[in-house]
Length: 496
Length: 88
Image (cartoon, rainbow over all chains, first blue to last red; front, top):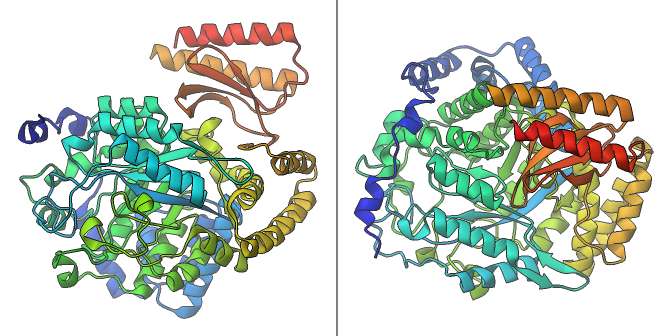
């Protein structure tokens, strides 16, 4: 029998915070960030200065906090339009014309914390609590990999001894081992990213050894006063610095792809945007490796969680668009994840702002994929999702907009990780791999999972991409065609 | 400190190999389950699927183009890399 109180007591290791601070100070300087925001309120932006900043972004340089504050000032529609154009160009330069898709998989909803905004908080008595066992995990993955066709998951765990590092490790092994016969080949999850509570270095080493994809921890809010208000001090999550240095510990443990994020709606969005960039700069400075991905979820309704209706920092759609634009420009090499929290129409529009990853066929109830529910059960979910499109539908909609869907999971299986992928992203070389692997993996998916309608439009996109590859990369083209034919002849999981 | 010196020596050795054999990218990764994390070397240049070779149970060598390396040289290269890694 696990003693929850004892487990909680031993979670935080002070040395694994203090070793990263600079003379006891952390990298989020609240006063300075507030002063940048106040300054942004007072002055109109100089268009020339904005264009200089946009040129830095186009050169795939991380922007300074001061640059970001300048971009926040922009409200002129013409300048916003210029920012959009540059954001789109950056996306094409770094990641080409592809969107990677994934699915979230919630493994349990037990949690020792009591975050005011979260449906899974410990004292929310209306939530039906459950942690998936091994058989149930297999059942979920059989649907995800065998019926929907996902190759990439983000697995989500509450902070609780029942979903501790040993459970996480076991669940990852289980996911990687599921292999399902499908229409023409087999379905399998090839990359598992993890969204979990902050961990100790020795625990992170356990995850590293299993072979995880990206390790994600979102700070929720970087604003210390707000953080203290929404995360009660008698909980583990109440320790701001333990969470702030999660990525430092992951990188020290050898997990060299990390994801950061903020939950927009807890505090002023401008503070969170500047802080996310500060976080990226800090990781670049200390480890030479910036965030592999940045996430920017907005608060969504959750069962029995009145805080969400009461917050004064709710982010409008217009501000949300600006958040995405500014992050794309400020951390130009990073992957940007737009989840199904957002409604379909907005996701269709925002994909043009430099988004690189989207989820589809999303279900966030515990066991919801194999339960085959066609509706949302809020008392089993952390929040309510806004876009319920299937993967097939999302792919079709993306294709109508000219985007190719990618199921690429190559990078972390051939050393395009950490500082290596940072260089490749900045130089535009990774964009070539993105394009080639999108074609190969998309063809595989179309053969194994697509509806007739999606296959037709998908093949049009592939043919357009192949013509472009032939023109732009004549030396590589024959190899692409060789791989393409091998996929059509039944081979699977080929990549550049 | 010792690790830094050996990794930079290894890096230098891989750069020389890339030039000598015109193999483009040539890099070493450490194996963590499915994950192969970059350790050192010349990053992809030719952008073609790399050939992978096991150095030992923990490390893998990736070469973009090994057409100029014969079997004997390949064995020597792997042995030398193995010895660098032993001291890292």
